[in-house]
Length: 231
Image 1 (cartoon, one colour):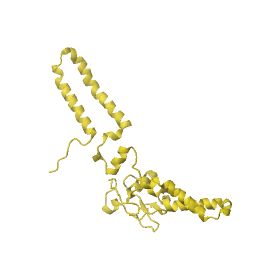
Image 2 (cartoon, one colour):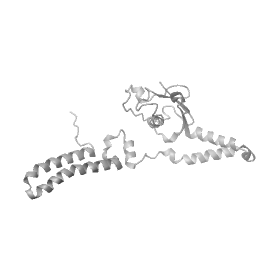
Image 3 (cartoon, rainbow, N blue to C red):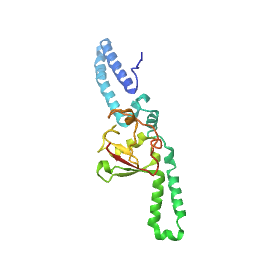
Image 4 (cartoon, one colour):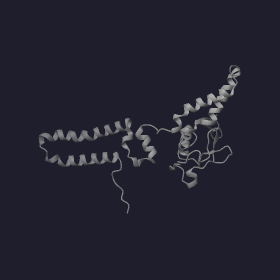
């Protein structure tokens, strides 16, 4: 028989502490001298009010302390919360180096005498070279009906789940949360739908279903253009 603990996170501790304090405080009230009862009653009334104020102050300025590791979907999410930001992604640190290398490659392939006369061509070559090696293009025009095209750094997304989350926030006026595979999908250059774990497992819409496969595993590579459309 599975046993489930009552105390799972700091919120449970706060609730138990407040309840025990109020009950025990009320229970000993008759045993206090009449001279001190008035002061003690004021304490019993002000204590929960102060506790609520402190709770909402914590919720506003440091809410991450109110959750236990078990409240997160994965260890990575918990670690990101503890660090105060997303965990470091290996590729992001080298993005500047990649850009510099691509600029040098393009300039070395262009005759020095022609650089000044073809600045626009050189700039376009640099842009295309960087885009093809470090970015993916997300074309959402078919879904939104607007000129919604986004260039996203490939190394910024460690999994398909990270990418679909980012696209959701970019298009949240057009799609609902946890609806990938139901109200919208990604399609590769060949027109094939990129299936995530929700589609593979037939998870109903509205329920979280993280897909931690890398972009390469699902067939998304740097320089690729993927479309966003209805299923």
